[in-house]
Image (cartoon, rainbow, N blue to C red; front, side, top):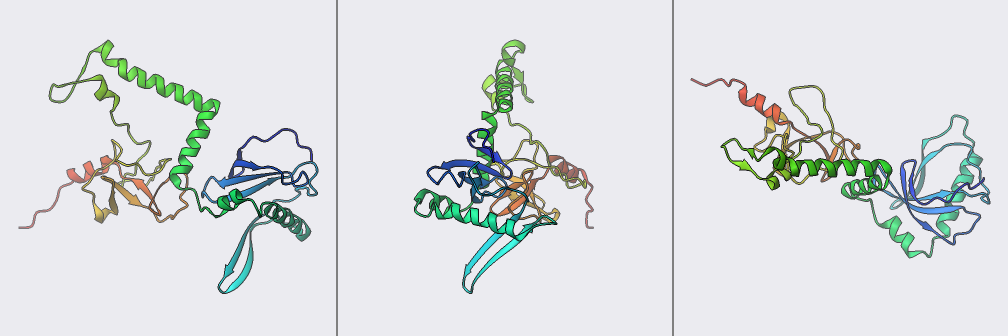
Length: 267
């Protein structure tokens, strides 16, 4: 297997590659500490080199389990090729076993594999850092800076804005204006749109705020109204994760509709 270029880290399938473990032997290839970008689980990733005695001919996805009480080992096959051959599976497991054996005395590798999952917040921060390192991320960051600059300079060209009571808003007040959420849940409709980052510390500007309507399935978190989903973590990337549950924000429009609805009065 020809090694065309040196891998410097990044995304590989569902894994984000981090530190490369050196001095593991040229016959093994390249060995990396990694994390699953969807679940945050720690992983090891082997990229075979031209001296590795293994050629990837089939795609498998497995899960290994070892329990101490009662003692047992299990190998679950989550995905296998229709014409899969057990010798190929055995060779793949042998290569992974060799990778672990060569890290047996590596304390850093032990800490990585036993450190638990990375939180949703850290995964999101990691995605943002990788995005900002890319050409697309730099373009988005530049446009954001230009937009904020225009927001600060607006009063200089067009005068101060007046508030609802005739009060003039300063440039600093405009700069801290709340931004709307990218999407909301409207309980009066059947559609359920999505957000793409962990649950924020305060409500979005267009999100329904407390008091919420528990009889409609709403719960209050950080002063905002949310709907708990049946999905449990790991949540999909378009859902908010909070304390082991998945949520979607309730739109302020749904509360306005409820307040306009007539209520019967008991005689």
